[in-house]
Length: 109
Image (cartoon, rainbow, N blue to C red; front, side):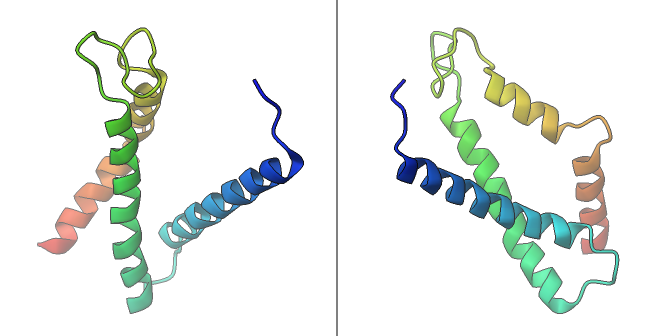
């Protein structure tokens, strides 16, 4: 594997930092214990579809091929590590996502 130049490595670090800051903002909003103001609701309604799109995009890249391998990473079997990780995180043992989804459905009614 070719070693990255110092400038490229720093650019990757900045990109990674920017992505984590975006996720940190969403997490901070979700963990806010005060009542949400209209701006908080607006931010959440923008953030949630963005995050769903990211997850779907990753899953699309890692679909199963006709030969049973991963289209994204070319792994020898499907589901690959990426799909398994996404599944484990979404279907977490504490059912946080299911709880959130049920709460959202109750709020709509």
